[in-house]
Amino acid sequence: MARQLLSLLLLLQIIIATITLFRSLAAVDAFVPFVARNIRFSASKKKMALSSSSQQHQPTVNTSFVSFLESTAPASLQSKDAKRRNNVIIGNEAGDADSIISALTLGYVTSFNNNSPPDNNTVQVPIVSIPRAEMELRRDAALLLDMVGINVQKLLYIDDDIVVTNHLLPSSADDSSDTLLDSTITLVDHNRLRPMFSHLNSLVTEIVDHHKDESHHEQVVADSGKRIIAFENGHATVASTCTLVAERLFQSMADSSIKIDGALGLSLLGVILLDSINMKPEAKKGTPRDEEAIQQLLQRTDWSSCADTVPSLMDQATIDKIFPDGRTNMPDRNALFNALIGAKSDPKFWLEMSAMNCLRIDYKKFIVNDRSSIGLSSVIITMNDLLAKEGFIDSMKAFIASEDVNLFGVLGVTFFDDKPKRELLLA
Image (tube, rainbow, N blue to C red; front, top):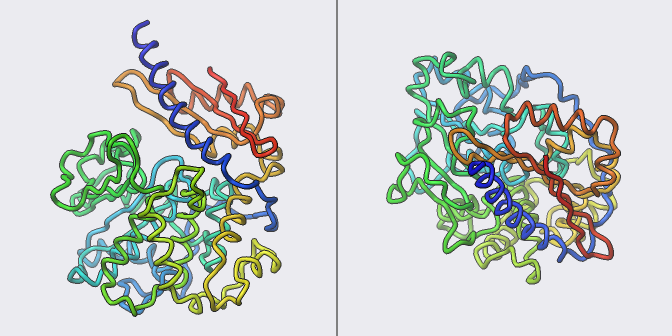
């Protein structure tokens, strides 16, 4: 009984924190309609389709962000034969835009850090922290990556064969091999490795995050410069992990005349705008560090370097709004934000989504102790519409069983006349 009460109290704390986030979303002028075409991925294949043109296994100074990501899979495969170490970079289990893109961009920025001597013995391997089939649900991240010319099919995902069979993230201690002794893990957008990978805890050597420190992975100490957790006095000091990645990028580019790769700059900019609610004061999400990162990215990015990409998920009218002065010039931050937030919150998208996908799309699991855990799904749909979905009860039972949690909640928010309505379901 006492354990159940403790779990309920913790869930209430989690819900209050989540409601704070949703309250900030109410400050958005309006959730604009999703103007992009329907997102379609053939995401069922787990084997990587590696381009024959991506044979550059060790990136060079002139490698673009897109080329770096295309070379990640072959580079990780070669590392064992070349006696090189893989450093896996992975976000949290919810796999939102910040988790996905901070992992991808940190891998690139770390590989080309001008302030550090080149480490030819370590391959940076960013991994998308969700199953491949779920990427189509992350419409804001998918839209942003499509804008900069990144083929999401060429990224590595947590359930890809190459990730498991090459022992990048083996699913159990029994699957581990001696090669793990030469592997390391960087956590982004969270600071505690998820329970399914607890056998890999000792491999965590770096943390880049903006959430409350859960005091795990004590081998990563703050004095080393490897435990970067932007959270002080009960508040995050940045709205986005991508802000922390941008700050590291700026530190490595002391010469302000050096231009930032266009795809890299737009990827970081888009997520920081999303997470800070475009720095709207009433949202109380953004911080001065976020605004500084936004301004530097706008001013220092070589926008012409990604001007030739042809987005497949966005119509030309929306592109013209985002780049009113042409693709070679800086984007309009308001139009970019509206396009991305609209992709995430489109009511039609939520109404058409299956019950199971609604529960999976923004789910977090919280460990209370060795015997108790809590699951919380956040949705942007009314509870009536959610409960009316075909097979909802059976889907929820199956989801709870698969996650093995003692207490489960669904926190919903919808907006009427720009005012939020919040609902809670407990199971």
